[in-house]
Length: 121
Image (tube, rainbow, N blue to C red; front, top):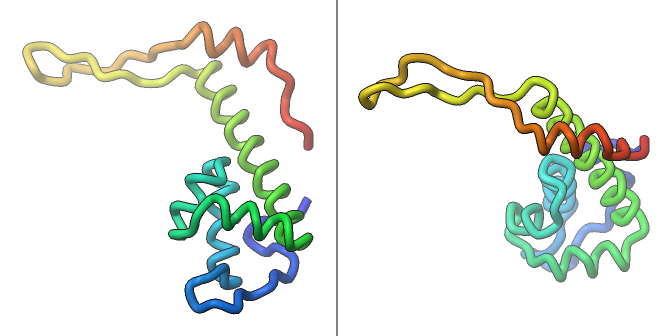
């Protein structure tokens, strides 16, 4: 799997406001972190449509995109499994003040995690 932080050589843009190599790398980093092309495109101030066009025209970018998405899916699956098994902390209030925390478990998430197929490596 290609590391999204260091993708194969990417084609620089001919436009000053286009898909520069730095912008492509930032897009791939956001894609790996958040998993969605729309959010990643917004983060680098480009349109989702132009990101898909670049992916269609550049095999190196398409390969790096796939690797970034795989990493994002694995990260999301790991976070869901952790939250399903360990729960999350919720503050307990009394008279407007936090008096402690309680661990809350989501049984629906645990059920879904038990029956989900782990993402491919």
